[in-house]
Image 1 (cartoon, rainbow, N blue to C red):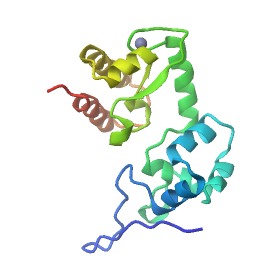
Image 2 (image 1 turned 90 degrees about the vertical axis):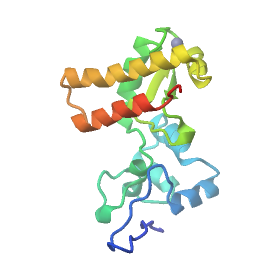
Image 3 (image 1 turned 135 degrees about the vertical axis):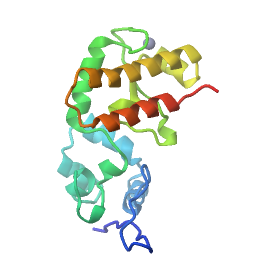
Image 4 (image 1 turned 45 degrees about the vertical axis):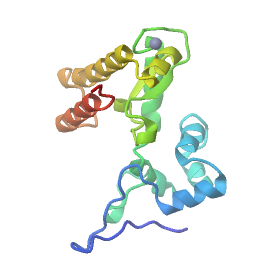
Length: 193
Ligand SMILES: [Zn+2]
């Protein structure tokens, strides 16, 4: 098994973290071998599929910890942390509740909903809930075409979700400070000049 170690900062002698969204060499190498994109495979085979963590890690030629660990020694991060990928239990609950509520912009029900990224995937947007709108294909298309009305509605939906957490005092993984930076993220992306 080849391990990836972050580069060392020559000034401090400490490991530099891998920038968010950047892939470690082992992942890139395996993507070539398997002919797959890691995030897609994670989504298909692990989140939606029936591969457990161990079998999924085997498929990618690494240990379970390398992909899924919450804390690693020496400041290293697991692949899920590096790419900021959604965890399994959370995504299921979220999908079930969102499906019953329908499209978050127009309210359309009984339709398959898309997980639309607020900060676009290609720009390194996160797949965690704060960056995802559950939209009908119609609203999703309009959002991607930068339709002003739909974009502003989407922004309000996302902000409302976060602000509600603060007011309802919900126990979340995020601290109030993190919630504020999430709000800042929602406001500053997809801005019209
Ligand atoms: Zn819609």
